[in-house]
Amino acid sequence: MINIVGAIIALGVVAWIFFGLAGKGQMRPEQWDDFVQASTWKNYLLPGLVNTLKAAILGIIGSVIFGLVFGVGRLSQNKLINGFCTVIVEFFRAVPVLLMIVFFNVFFARSLELPGDTALWAVVAALVFYNGSVVAELVRSGVHNLPKGQREAGIAIGLTRGMSLRHIEIPQALVAMLPALIGQFVVILKDSALGYIISFNELLFFARTYSSPNGNVLQALIVTAVIFILINFTLSKIAEMVSKRLSSRVKKSKDAPAELVGAPAGALAAGSVDSAEKDPNNPGV
Image 1 (cartoon, helix red, strand yellow):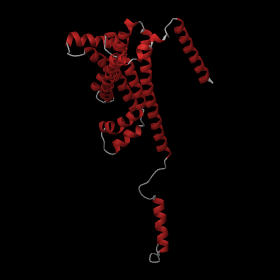
Image 2 (image 1 turned 90 degrees about the horizontal axis):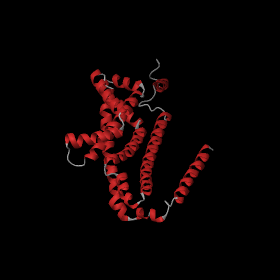
Image 3 (image 1 turned 45 degrees about the vertical axis):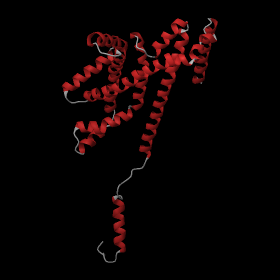
Image 4 (image 1 turned 180 degrees about the vertical axis):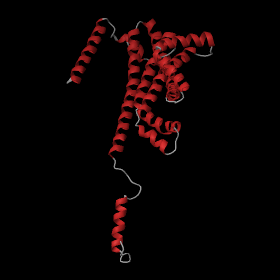
């Protein structure tokens, strides 16, 4: 019932917005016909989408690497390494992404004077440092949430704490946090649109650039929002599928009966007794 009521309210809000825009003349066909032309997509929207995906992919790769390195560092028993990684992670988690984008844009263009598209690298650096810090915290919390018996079992078979961390605990933590990790990828994709502030040629920037002279900025923003919604919805569905698959695997592993390599000791004993009783040459049993 709550879902039904919520759906009715959402449809009512959409209808109110639609008729409000129609009353202002924003729903006329001539306001939307630019976005059904191939030239608009070829020259503006698709290049912007490519740059958005490029920044997001680079940000995802860098965030995963950053998160693994500093997440493992926060799990280190070395106080110097642990303290350094903790300061880095907590610092970049506290700084807003937009502030880092502006800072890195000025730093790369004026201080380092990097060649090429400094706006792209500023966006990627900000995404990596912020989201990588979040991934590092996911790694740390994922390892801490594992049963203590995992590490004890590794140590019992001769592994050091570091070897147990690398070969046993972190792989299990990565599997457990995979749905949350994919959800963080959605955040990276959305935050790439903040590059508009520094004139990074991503999807939102191209949409605003194209629509401003034509007087249909609102329509361009709606089209851009729909594109982001479709991509993020796909990533969310992937995260949901991964979560269900992992849950089903865990459930099957819990419900499956234990498989023994050899026969039970009781069965072996019973079998030997039965065979001994049937053996007339062994009366002493």
